[in-house]
Image (tube, rainbow, N blue to C red; front, side, top):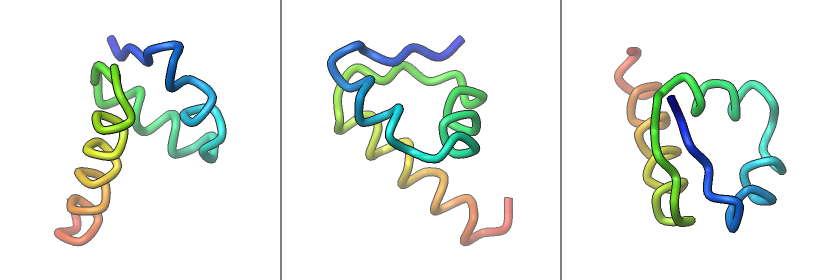
Length: 51
């Protein structure tokens, strides 16, 4: 189950709905903006490799 810290919730909520859903399906714990950025980098890397 994913978790988004309320401190970064506004930034998370500002992203497109499909991206937010994708992140939540990854079962990640997002405590900081660094965590969120790392998650986005993983998504980009997966897209580049076709996964």
